[in-house]
Amino acid sequence: MMEHAQMEETILFPLFDKADRGLAKVAKEEHARDLPLMNGIKEVIKSVGVLDSGSPDYHEALCSLSTRLKSLQGQCKQHFAEEEMELLPLMKALELSKEQEVSALEQCFEVMQGTHNRLLKFFLEGLPPHDAMKYLDLISKCRDKEKMESILQKIVK
Image 1 (cartoon, rainbow, N blue to C red):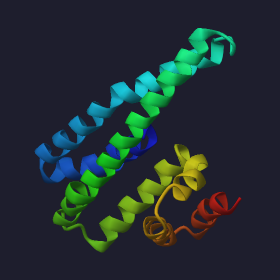
Image 2: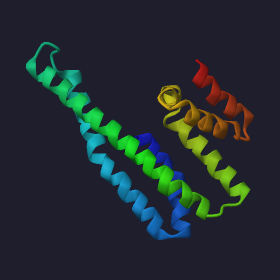
Image 3: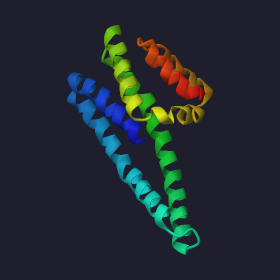
Image 4: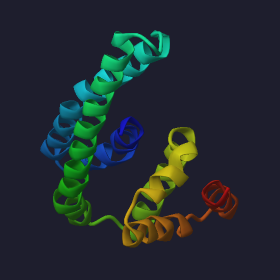
């Protein structure tokens, strides 16, 4: 989610800012809503890493982590559903030229390679087949064929 948020903040929000500052503000507030939960998960993971696996604190930390991950999963589902319903139509309302769309997509690939490229296979495996195909279709639109091949190789490895 952190990497997903970084991509949106780096590429999409500036597009929204140009069209209407209120659009970006609402989207940024949505991201801020999820940060405490994600930061809490990071902290619990750190504590699990240093605790003795036989201790009661270790067991308690694992239970806490499980609860937080389930909560994050629910928030992620809600976040993505909201994006499909609200954010994607806003992207269409921006009426970007084909060149602007392709440029934004290329920027997404740049950010993705620096952030969650290593998680792409894991990400795609978690998507319903129809959504995974949409994502692969986007990747196929990459003008830089070497970059596209590199991304696809990460998936098949």
